[in-house]
Length: 153
Image (tube, rainbow, N blue to C red; front, side, top):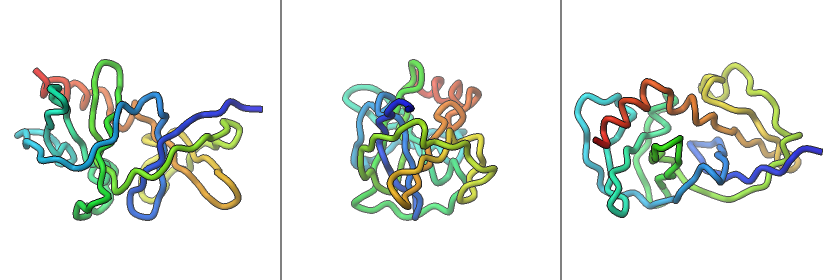
């Protein structure tokens, strides 16, 4: 019997994704952002989150999914990676689920056009629900983290 993994569920288009609850600091509504020049297109800017300058990336842009207009349900999921906190723009934050690690399989090479390196696995939830678990280490790869850390200085 595997361990229970608690994940925050969010959506991008028709797909549902998950990231471990212990990596999520907060979930925020969309707020105005300050653009930062010379950053990749998927880095949408920085926000002042309770006195902390936090870089924000658009996961659609990061994964090469066609961008969509932000709506009332668009959220910024603030995740912690090491010392760095980064906001990830998602279409909606939906749920918190317990996933048994026995139900997590290695990701196929490509899921919905997203390369496997960004994915930790695919979890089967219930009878016919699949949840794509993110590999935050790759979503925010080291060279980009260095770029983002420089934004904070």
